[in-house]
Amino acid sequence: MNAFRFSTSVLDTAALQREMRDESCGGFASFEGWVRNHNEGHAVTRLEYEAFVELAEKEGARIVEEARTKYGVTRAACVHRVGPLALGDVAVWVGVSAAHRDEAFRACRFIIDEVKHRVPIWKKEHYVNGDSGWVNCERCAMPAAHEHDHDHQHHHAPAPSPDYSRQIALREVGADGQARLRGSSVLVVGAGGLGVPVLQYLAGAGVGRLGIVDADRLEPSNLHRQTWYALSECGQEKASLAAARVRALNPEVRVESHALRLDAHNAERLSAGYDLILDCTDNFSTKFLLNDLALRSGKPVLFASVYQYEGQLQLVRGDNITACLRCVWPDATRDGLVGNCAEAGVLGPVPGVFGSLQALEALKLLLGLPGLKPDEMLIFDLITLGTHRLRARRMPNCEAHGRAGSLAPAPAPDELEVQFGSLADAKQAGYTFVDVRDSRERSLDPLPGESLHLPMSKLLTDAARLEIAGRYLLICATGKRSAAAADLLRSQGFAECRSLSGGLKRLKASA
Ligand SMILES: [Zn+2]
Image (cartoon, rainbow, N blue to C red):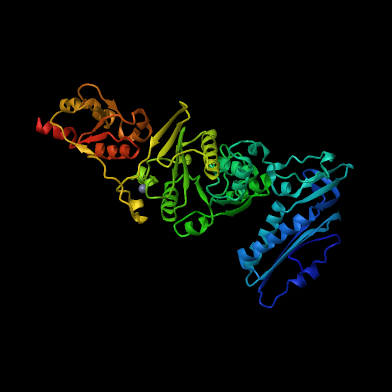
């Protein structure tokens, strides 16, 4: 029998079950969806199902096949009623036989969930009060949209198809650009604060294939920034919630979801076949994993990070010429350097802004339009509304670039540490002093004359106060912190910044 089919008559479930018998199977699981006497507070007397049969059969068959390969089951089938049904009738039947019961249960669950979300079937409910209403089954399966519209005019309106005319109208997009988007594929890692706007806009734009990786389940604390989801969906896997939303928004997009954490073992496999990867996570280990994947595979990764009111965007091309994440943040993996939303707190629109920017940059990349360059980082402070673009330079001693088997040697840096007999000599040499000690040290042992105060703890956020071409001498007590700070600033394009070798201690000793 066809793996997915419609029936206009009452289902003979015993006969259906017999069809699924197989001597190699140790387990059979089935699901029956029944017509019940109430829905959404309305007493239901009977109902009708209507489907776009041709489309629905294709999609249904695809779902059953997906279940068969995903869970390795022997036989799987789904039969859905159409036309008028009575209370108590079996509206949909799913049967799966497999070598073991676990696969049978899981495949059965998968099929019914996917059918509810993906197959174009409508249900018309007749209520006790004589009223009736058409209900999209997809909406039944999604508690997000409980406000069923009982407007009778909705009946037989054919499902509208996606319309990209508003973006095709742009000279930069046009029909060619639209075709390009349709032929593109993007893997989105993280379906949270950044991932939600990213997925919305990429699906809306008609990017042909989207992959979603997220191991988390929705929590009430997510919703202030992940406003695509519903409170009633808490506890469900975000990857499948997001996939269902993408399908609802644009059925033309092929979407694959993976409810697991990207790690060193699966990164290669999950990203295979995608043109571009978007990092929408809030944790450093995944970011660096993706960074290294970019360098190994040559596949571009667009990173976004948010910290309280500030965030940044960086594109890693995965080549040997332009900067990678580790070129910019050689020490970033150490704990506590940047917190995540859970620890640091965040206002909902902040990841919304950065996710939107990320989606925009992704579309521009796919369309071949100018945008963020691989040798820069865009930093946007949403308190002051100030933007900064920092240079990101390929560092010659970058560990990740080295590991990726980089070929051409990167240019050697200028001397990072310099020595002076006195601070006056340094001033004479045209340096502006930058004190990287903390406030307490600074007040106990102030520097003579003018100096900027940029304590280590604020270096990452306050570097934007410095001028990119400024001649800076970084100073601390012993020269250690200032050397690390100078190294970091160099990597962000402050080519003329140096560290006072030996710090104030050496100056005093030689005085
Ligand atoms: Zn690097």
